[in-house]
Amino acid sequence: MTLREFFVYFGNNPQSVVVYFAALPLVAILMGLIPRDQRQQPPWNFLYAAIIYLSAVPGLFVLTLNIYVFLFERQSIMDLDIFSQVLPMVSMVITLGIIRKDVDLPMCRGLKNYRV
Image (cartoon, rainbow, N blue to C red; front, side, top):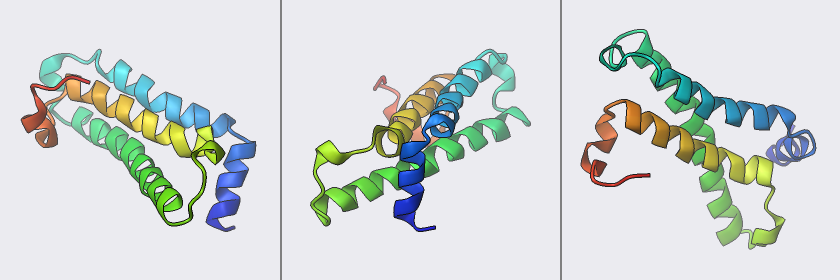
């Protein structure tokens, strides 16, 4: 299976992609119900790290792939597949925004004055 076939498959069957990328912000919202003093302690910090990786890796991959496709392949922005090329980036931004409000992330210490 090539990368093109992978994206075509998920473009034709978007149910699993939508469920996956909708579940990540929902889990982050549910984790916000944990008492504030326990969020930085195990096992909750490991679960936050897992959610960050599960959203950031596909989101950044799709972002770099889209930059490559638009700059070097000269593909039109109108040919973008919403489920496989936009949803991962949107889910990543929303998930990281929710987690950033709940947990003190070292990467966001300089961004405390900015709100998502």
